[in-house]
Image 1: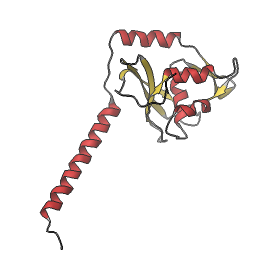
Image 2 (image 1 turned 135 degrees about the horizontal axis):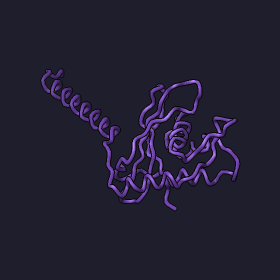
Image 3 (image 1 turned 180 degrees about the vertical axis):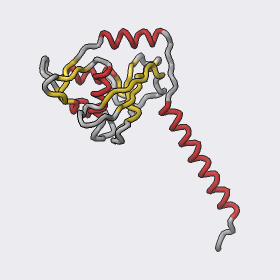
Image 4 (image 1 turned 30 degrees about the vertical axis):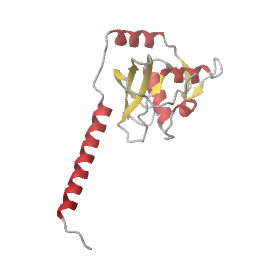
Length: 175
């Protein structure tokens, strides 16, 4: 089996954008996430892209196959915490796994345990897969805000470098 943490050669096309509440009942913060698809590998991915509550997170793409592997490795009929998703991330942020679990709940892949809101059960893949399958077949490709922002930041960085070089070229050098 290939390493599911390998960098993605080409960014997945965005099939769906969603928002969901965080798992914590003490906040009204919302998370935004993307579901993407790689045409070259046939892999579906998910990533968190924003948090209105201000907590740090990684916007790494996580393969859905890796997620389901982790879920399937849990004892049958036993609820599990979001913490089991932590190894999926290269970045070791404290919020990544909980935020991912929140998005997976919104998509119906996970469901909360009524009496223990921080525990999850596998909710199934059929409805999710059917919906995503239609988006793939329709060749859906939404704008990638993360990539646009990264390009803007890179353009500003390049402009700043050019300004510094121009200023250095104009100033007399001391011997």
